[in-house]
Each structure stands twice: as structure tokens, then as C-alpha cells.
Image (cartoon, rainbow, N blue to C red; front, side, top):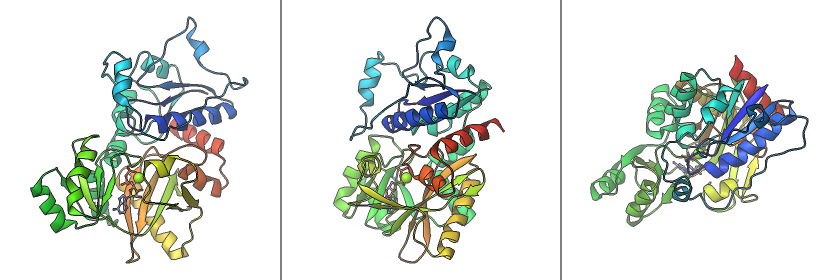
Length: 345
Ligand SMILES: Nc1ncnc2c1ncn2[C@@H]1O[C@H](COP(=O)(O)OP(=O)(O)O)[C@@H](O)[C@H]1O
Ligand SMILES: [Mg+2]
């Protein structure tokens, strides 16, 4: 098959995406596909013969991208492109139209919130993962938590906040301290702070506001953290994430060796079943597509609180979903290939 892997984009998570995208592209080459990876924001120049863009599986070329330790500077990237704010770069849609399937390896922003999925659908271009509706619902933490509650999935109490004294009063009454301040539509823990004192409230909300205007404060649930993948209707074995220091923030997520992952997680069978059921209910309530990854914290009361569902989970071979898939005998390249094939159904 001919596959375009879309990565990068104008998102705080673009580096993570370029890393995932490179490895997905290599895996698809290994499976015998013709592949090209493109940065959806930066765009691509067409050579004289457009067909030459697709890398053939028989060659020795491999993509490579290392994630820097800090989040990318998007202003600099925009400046490099003359201040351009259109999210889809030169020739990207034309390139996608040449493919049998577009593998969306984006994280955050328009790749994850459904905008790109809607554009591709309007152009009759096939793509991997959830459609624009599921993407939008899962990306909005306020909306998705409301749907989880309606579906009977436990999720921590929360309120939308602004950097004001009035908002602080509401947080004190509804959520309490410590609490977690997070942007409503971000990922990779970008802009997330765990605060234990009221005096940290304003600075934490302002930090989250650097990324977007809608921010929520959520009751902090101290406890073990887990993630459950869903692939083609099957719930994968849960993985436990144990950061060596602090919580599962951007650095702990993407710098090697800073968190231990245990898969399958050490849980009693009834606990694993309970979390798997909540993961499936959440996946369905948010109308998600062929795959997703749903995250939980096990509270001291024995309840699994759902943090969020990810429609575009990390996809390096050592990311959580690929590790869970490995437990059921699916290699990384098989997983990428399966995700592509599910897009054709
Ligand atoms: N309510 C909470 N209680 C405890 N830890 C939390 C809570 N919410 C978030 N965290 C921590 O912050 C991380 C990122 O939060 P999450 O809601 O998953 O946002 P993101 O979409 O950025 O991944 C989680 O993986 C977890 O370690
Ligand atoms: Mg998360």
C-alpha cells in the first residue's frame, strides 16, 4: 500500500509526534508498504516526478528523530514560515490524496482534536484511528469527563477555572487541595501542574493559559497510575506507570529511564477486569474508532478514576500501547500494519 504518515504540526507535542511518526514510517516500510512521512505544518516540495516521494520498502532509508528534553518553540517555527498561521502546509492534501491511507501520527492540536480528520473526510481521504467526532470528544477533557460521568465511569471532581480569586474560591469548595491544574485540550502533560497550596493557584492557571484559554482544576487522586489500550474492539492488558520522581510529566514521559512501566500490571483479576470494563465504556461513550488508550488512577478507596482517553497515543515501540500490544503477541510493525488495515474497513 501507499501510505502517507502525517507528523509534526503546530502543536506543543510536535517533537513527540515526529519521533512516533518516524518509527511508524519505518515499521510500515518493514511491512512492505511504500511510505512518506511529512510534517503537516511545514508542508512538502513536490519533485518533478511526484511518485518519487514515496520511499520503497526495498531500500535502506530509515527515518530518525530524537525528542529534545524541552517542549518545542512554536513561535520560532511560525517565524520560519513567515508568520503563516494556516495549519496545513504546502502540498500536504495533494500528497495525502495520492495515498491509499494516511497514518495520523500527530499529537495534540488539530491532529488530535478532529479538525484534520474532518478535512481529510471532506476530501474523501482514508485515515487511521478515530473520526473527527470521537477525536473532538476525547480531546476536550471537560466534555469527555461529563460523558464518562453519564456513562457511569468514575472520574475525579473538577471545575473550569480562570486566574481569579473567585475561581480560587470555587476550587477550594468543589475540588480542594492538592489539585491538578491542566489545559482542557492539551496532551503529554503540557501545561499540567499539581499544586498543594492555594498560593500556587494563579501561577499554575497562568502556566496552563500559556497553552490555551480553557483550563480545569481537578481533584488530585493520589495512587497508582495505569493505562489500558483498546485495539479493534479488544481490551489490551493494562500497564502500570511508575515515575521515579514526581508525577508523569513531559520529561518523565519522553526521557528514557525516568519511569518504570510494568505490563501486564500487577493487579488482582477483578481489578484488571473493572478497569478494562471502564476503558471499554469510555471508548464507546466517546465514540472512538479502531484504537485508543484510556488512562486511570487507582484511588485509596479502590476505585479506578479515569483521567482521559487518548485517540492518538504515543506510538514509539516503547510507548504504552505498543508495549501492551506486545503482551498479546503483536509486534510493533504488526500493530502499525493492523492500524492501517483497520482504516480500510
Ligand atoms: N486527578 C489527578 N490526580 C493525580 N494525578 C493526576 C491527575 N490528573 C493528572 N495527573 C497526572 O498528570 C498526568 C497528565 O494528566 P492528563 O490528564 O493525563 O493530561 P495529558 O492529556 O496532558 O496527558 C497524568 O498522567 C498523571 O500523572
Ligand atoms: Mg494523559
